[in-house]
Image (cartoon, rainbow, N blue to C red):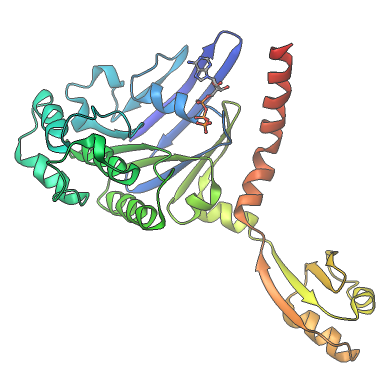
Length: 306
Ligand SMILES: Nc1ncnc2c1ncn2[C@@H]1O[C@H](COP(=O)(O)OP(=O)(O)OP(=O)(O)O)[C@@H](O)[C@H]1O
């Protein structure tokens, strides 16, 4: 479990993280979301003891990171996949980490197999593709078999196969009872992976809720209707919450089911060419939620520049 209480980080005038309090529970993937510059990386760095907090606390399984007797066994982290000496082989990179943390040598081959690098583990890491470096970074995170895992933007720059692989790995790690924290600035990535959501904007907590609650709250449905008689149909849809034009012959209707729209059209003899229910995207819901934070950031940057 990760517990963050009143965590704050200032860089001069900039408050990068502003009085954050949240928990990352075992058995779940927690998505850590926020627009660029929201303070995600800074928060993760404080959890991992790489940055000192200005105030507040962050603990992993009850202890601040610097007090962990065996850090790799307490928490595994993927922050920057390029942080590997290019001249070293993956095997030797992991072996050095294992030796420094009292982890048996046999575990190195185990994690190489777990991330699918067993055949290339003896090659120099400098020759690895981004996807392979990402897998090596994950192997390092898993080395100490820790109960807590932290991934900073793990899907960045990966091909679809790599994305599916990391998603299923995170789901599996949570199913094994680990607490998994994953940051991203894209809502669409979270929908398929996270059980719980923590959203921040300009360093402040904006939302902390189960993913299914976020989806339920923002899964307003709309119906796309294409008809050569859009004006006549619009006059019939008086009970709809909202009707807007998407095109000359296309309306987008909120607040009525497709079947209700079809029945109204049919009763009035109106011709329909398309009737498609669709869900408002979660990406849009997330952007609406954080738009104020983004605008504020832009204003404050303008002030700083002057
Ligand atoms: N070392 C630093 N010195 C000064 N300001 C910093 C430093 N590190 C981060 N910041 C500022 O703190 C704020 C938060 O940055 P951070 O990198 O944590 O955001 P983020 O949510 O991870 O963004 P991104 O999605 O772009 O990685 C930004 O305004 C950034 O400019």
